[in-house]
Length: 252
Length: 332
Image (tube, rainbow over all chains, first blue to last red; front, side):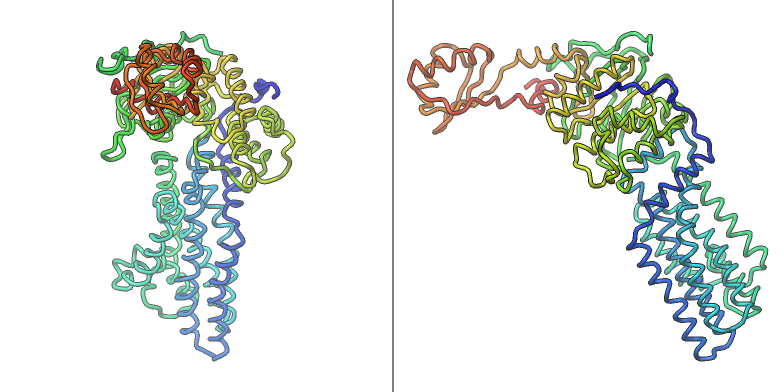
């Protein structure tokens, strides 16, 4: 064994927020990148373009195309892919007990959360954007739906990833809770009325799509400004709560 | 590094039946100061009203599995807050003070590492997350410290348990910590590595760092250092010098199983010579209680030759940690 004492130059110091974000981003990105997860989610995401192609082959109307993108793309592919990556971003580290290697460091909590969410978004973006935009293109319903699908996907992706990052920090079975939110709350309960739908992100992404295409879609009556601003505010709030929760929870 | 006074923990430990450890001073101080700390998980009391302070050098925290050692360590690192009382590390609250976390290192008990990284990358990551100026060089130094300098690019996920343990220890050194908390760090190490690691802990302690090492193996603690804290059932049952603890253990009655070709004949002689205070027999063994284990040990072989019986086994039945704790806690 050699001299145990590192040189005096290695005395630790506070880690700047930017560096903490970068370090967390890299380690979480690598943790999330498993071949099985990416292949599985890519196969799931194929549902959207395949449905779009089928619809486009049948010369369906713009209304049908928008409904398809809203339900399969924005209502299913986008939230599920975001859940898997967003929830796992810190949830996996918490569950496999490696979170301690970030938590027990001289860094603030919010950069850890931001870095993890960015890593999740990095993996979620290509799968969801390609899938949903391809679906819109393959319906053959024009440029409006493609632009709307792209815009709605980007806004929805930011919100969903941040909310599910919070789920991963807070909840032990984040996948179960996330699926319950997507399938039961957004897919079922939020359909019951406009009041309840306000707390469903799906309504905001649908509103963006409607604004861009002019199609009349159920539960999509927010203005473009509201439909963009609210999800972004939700995203910031989710990250802030996640950072607070990370500071105050027990770490194994 | 530290000019602080020696640990305030004292011996002798509470004698059995004398009502637990002595009342602690109002507020203890030290590199690590634990004052009247309790931790509850729902209705389960994991740690109950524990107070002690430790300073530079190696201190062993001894306790059976489930005694509350890891919970205490987690509180010292701020990973979980105490339900009652306070924990201070280097004068700060480890739960809420960001910067003190850079002066403390933990080797966690769990076998969790970032498995996709090589040992060098993992240590480099640890150094960067501590804000160390020269992470590559520091990582290599730390790897060399635990004899893993030549381990190559293999991911730590493919390492043996012992190698993973050494990687965890190396990762805890990259920030040049003033306080080093090691939760069962010798688990999975072979005897040679165990010896090296114990020597490393002593060197770290001699440099003025506060090194707190937990173990549930009595013999390990004997080698770790003279200062011990003994915890059982969430309570601090003894603290101070290991030799005093050992002496206390040696003063009590010991139970020994002696395997022999003629248990009845051997038992008769042992009773006649006053070497045992109680015994029982079965077909192949004599189970004896003795207050003078040394005399019994010295005379047993001679007696067996003298009376012509063969000895097949001599095993102490109560030298395990559980029985030590039982003795300290319950007086039996």
